[in-house]
Image (cartoon, rainbow over all chains, first blue to last red):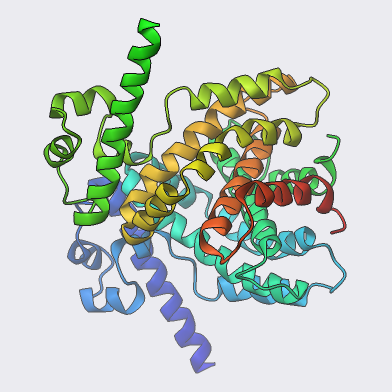
Length: 197
Length: 197
């Protein structure tokens, strides 16, 4: 129980710091705000900030620890004979939970990226870390070489593109549909609809 | 003939400036090199530089004028009953010509982006301009709303992702296959292989 409590406290501190970073980045600008200001707002020392995050940008976009591992484990546990895109969809859906829970935060993050294009590389680095990790696990499933074969990269790239497009649509189009529905439509179109529409 | 000659001269000047930008960005760094240095190397005035390009980054990544229009016209001219992905593939293949012709340039550009991540937003802006324009034309074909419907965004996003993955694979994997072959494999997998593999 002690470790459970400690882990929850750590997670709470991490979230407080991430929230303070997002709030101050929106208020004074992500390029202007300092780690000292963020630490003060989160009521921690700058040193504690750096125990959790490598940089302001990292604190803005990085995934909750364990989330990527959860996605990879989900992919690994899918039945061997399941088509790659269905298996990837199951793995990626693990992350849509957090998109929906955190709708407000995501919309502010995406606005920051639109208004400060230099943040794009930090934002996309998150996607590309997910992609690299998923390619390795999928290649293993397919008995393919993650570096020399095109198909694992293609399946993962297309699945992540579908997720990204569903998320952007959900944020930007005036839609009352849930993210789950949109991700569902995107993958159904991909797996059944591409040949003839 | 006079306009033909003038257009060719303009195109040659544009290419000289773009080449000088790429060479100097690789040599001294894209963040360090100045427009003055680039203009001098290209034997033009800084003012002439800005007649062709809005910035150094623009000169590094922007498409040849007319290329996007060519892609859009190709998409518009495809038969109405052709599946979207096949029509998009035909439009995007217009651009692989220039990737292949310019293999050396592309590999240096992609290396610059890897070594200077801040360039990523400029590099991706090219893709996202292509995407936005293609979504509008495809939506028209499908009788869909480019802003409110998911499917035009999804088809274009997935097609461009397939192209991007084929290009990266061609550049980064040790492959002797041509870009055409890789794009072909990518789209064939997308249109026929996704359901069952």
